[in-house]
Amino acid sequence: MHASLIDDTHAPLRNPELAPLSDIRISEIDGLRGVAVLLVLMWHFVGAVISPTLGAAAKAMGAILIFGRTGVDLFFVLSGFLIIGILVDRRNCNNYFIVFFARRALRILPPYSLLLIAFWALSALVSDNYYFGTQIPWWSYATFTQNWYIIKLNSWGPAASSVTWSVAIEEQFYLVFPIIVYLTPTRFIIPLLLSIGFCSIVARASCFMLLPQNPYAPYVATCLRLDGLCAGGLLAVIRRDAKVWQKLSALRLMILKATVFFIALVPIFLVALQRSPAATMFFWGHTYLTILYSLVLTAVLQTPGARITGALRSKPLRQLGSISYTTYLFHPLFIGLAFIAAGKREELGSFSDAALLAAAMLATLLLSAASYRFVERKLVAFGHKLSYSPSRCSVVTRVVPAPKAR
Image (spheres, rainbow, N blue to C red):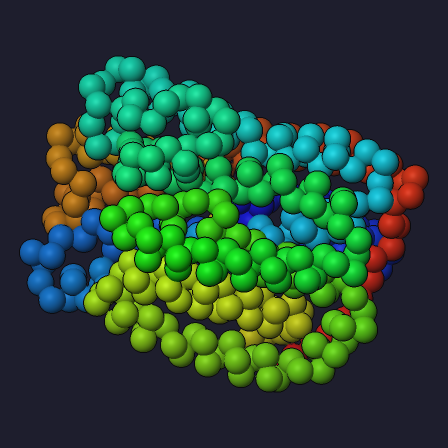
């Protein structure tokens, strides 16, 4: 779904002090990718399917694990941070557009194309059902415009391809924002990102007020989900201003306290979701999540190597982050195949259901790991052989590092 999902990994640099920030690998961001996809998996494999017949504990688990849906909000913030950072660092390069789009295509299209081929082949073999079908035209998937068809249908469409709405939003973001960053004078980038993000928040709430009968519109319309992308982009631009970042780093303790405060609001957010999910999300929920995850990212960037962020540097979480894109794309398809093969309705209500979901999870992770090792990683490496032209390019982009937390 995402630059955050779509890991644009660089080999370790011999001298990272003399490189654009977008070329410097941050282990904690790999871990945040892992957290984001783990949240989504917890929701789809447990929270969304757990049977209420299992009792109050199951209902409570579903009410808590619905927070897993916010993994997409985290992906958007990470995507904005990573992509806007690349664009700002390379905006003066002669081959800015060619290299950016070529690298994006090499990273995004192979797993996505494989998913579409599998989805269309299976849809042709079976009659339209919950997982597979032709409700959304094939060409909308091919052009990354399926999110607009979801709005038109007022439905997710086939479950096996439903998660691609967020990939569509990111692709549209990739197409438009390189032009915006290229044409916008540096001093206007921050005000522009703030303006776009604010307008997106207002438009989302307004859309829900005017079209309450179509809750898909404020959820998947690109222009109504730009606040997270812009917030991440705003942080990327600020981080590239040494004076501003140094001042922000001086407020590190205050930012950590604000992060803890917003995390402490999660129970209130979950209660509000149970009472009025649509109104909660579209009036203030997505905005709250944008602020929460922006604070988390800021805190992570300001405490490099700290014990408090040690979990994000753990090998399992970073490895999950490296395969998060394909994992995100394929897990609904494997869930569907597992339950279709068993002739059962998608539900977690017995040990046999748990076994089906475990098999789907294992298949997803195995495919994702194989895809990353044998295809994606090699294509990313090839993409980085397409170097940005040094002519007029910013060679060095540095910030004053934040002091390490103990």
